[in-house]
Image (tube, rainbow over all chains, first blue to last red; front, side):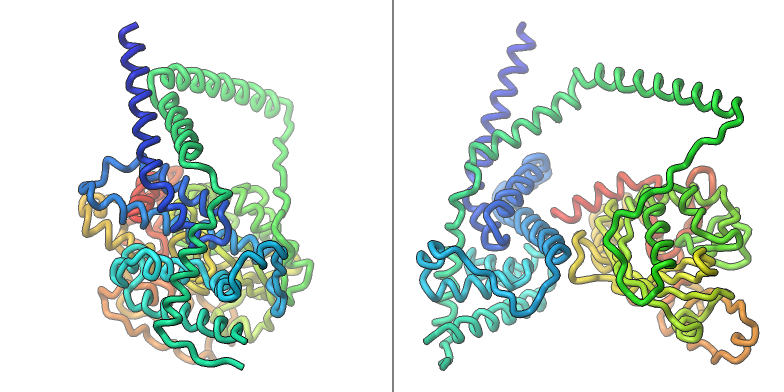
Length: 178
Length: 360
């Protein structure tokens, strides 16, 4: 009975630790993944997989202070991976045809400022890797060097991705203005 | 009409948009739901790995033993009755192959790939001519071939180890397009041909999931009617942008460098240094079977690489490079090419190391 109680106590302790771990990081990581993935469902998948992976490997982290960038890196890469696999499936199912425009439901269009409508269209046309560097650098405030570490690419590649992404967003934004 | 946005205004607009988009998470599961999911899977792992698992493993082992004994009895009865075991020809399930190669040969390639992907050796052998051969991405010591990177299909006993290598790396090929080449075009491209009558040149997406590796390849096929005389592979794109697995060849080399710097002992055990002959022509290592063509062909340019220069370009530029060490698979000694030189017996450890590298 004592052993069973000990095991049960350990299980409760472990469950509480998982809950606390997820609660501490989930919202931030979900927002990060949402900026990279095309939809919320993929973003949630990326975070769930990333957090589970991180939970199993948390004991390998030497410095607790580095947990946030470590998690950000895991989830960023998972979000890019999921987005690319979805992209591949989509591209196989629906052969890309130039000139095809996705029509959004009217209620969604009405709720978005015109600037965001234009930026959203351009942002979603960027590759997951481009979306990742824009999100990490421009929203989460990581430097170019830190972003390069996050996405596993050379700094010059990150600068190039940022430059290309901003050019495309600028083009869409300028075209949309009256 | 458009007017030019100032940089600071653009940055401001993008940041506002990102902040707005990041809040579009209303439909996501809650943190509590995610924690419950992780907890459930952790608990499942605990059950599998904990004390109850010992009983579970014993039960599984007992069932497996019973299954093996049953299969042996059935097999022995079948053999005694003189009946052969029926080998099911795997059904190609991939999308139709595009390109100018005639449908008859495309259908053969589809069966070839299905057999390869499902590791059905009988079906794999069945699409080849009796005197056919292929590049097994290395050399078996027991091969009867006079040529490197050539395994005659007649060496039937070596096809199973070849399949086992593919199984260890989880290999899967997807043929995208196959074009028919004229004999001279094919010879110019591959510097070699058999006395076939149809020459196929196929773009293929190749994946080795155990290594998280994906590359685009050209596969060459030489046909006699609807049977394959030769199948070979060359790298088309070592780091395809549209790959779905994390690593291209450059990434795989990065993993090797990372392992060497972080854990030299593991690197010494898991890796297999690539070696190259000092002077080789830069193109295919196969020989002309057409002597007239061979005598008129221009000499091959020498490769311009330093002795210790091992990189993506060198690995993919010719097929002479190989792993320094050979190893044994299913009792057969195998000398791997430079592309994937690792010992398949270490596949689990290599996979774990690559996964660690990917999340570092």
